[in-house]
Amino acid sequence: KQEVTQIPAALSVPEGENLVLNCSFTDSAIYNLQWFRQDPGKGLTSLLLIQSSQREQTSGRLNASLDKSSGRSTLYIAASQPGDSATYLCAVPGQGGSEKLVFGKGTKLTVNP
Amino acid sequence: GAGVSQTPSNKVTEKGKYVELRCDPISGHTALYWYRQSLGQGPEFLIYFQGTGAADDSGLPNDRFFAVRPEGSVSTLKIQRTERGDSAVYLCASSLRPTLSTDTQYFGPGTRLTVL
Image 1 (cartoon, rainbow over the protein chains, first blue to last red):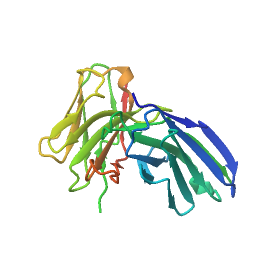
Image 2: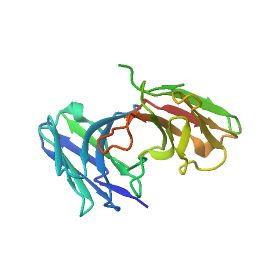
Image 3: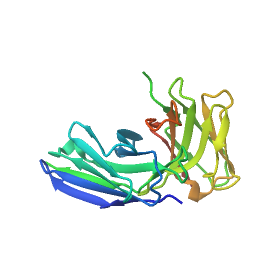
Image 4: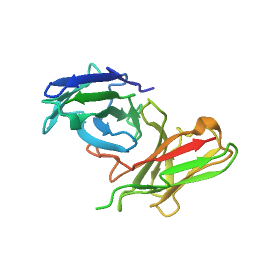
């Protein structure tokens, strides 16, 4: 059974800091990994999708890396801003390449002005 | 274009009642997913439709939960004899080509269900 763990559960940083969010998964036979953002009371917004053949993806100040063999991914946020405050969720396909997504519990990020 | 929409945004019901939650996917998306998110947890998969048929319903917790997608577009999640433990945010997502490694699921804002 695919399981996803995210560390830390919560993170509070001052504005301008660079930070790293971690995600690990138990079944490395994945075809992609996604990072989502969730604002309070809202749905999920896809931030980055990394295919299994890729090692990283970048979008603006966000950079996600993937190490399939070790079952790990990181989301790097550069020059954090108060508007980055949200919960960040990592998701991978279910066991055996299922189309369903298996999510971690998320990291709640607070960026203080 | 319009994203995934869900109605109602909030639903309060009493224990034992029947509820229906509706999802309108992005036009043209063949795949539709239902997830449930409890406070402080990530979303948990319930059911996945490819077209009109349920391709994977392994996440439905018991036979009180049922979902339909009769015309391959709008879907309704139905919960019978609701229990307090059913209280959660129910999220719907849709995607265009789920068999591709580049496929992304687009999520709706969710329906917050509260069972008193």
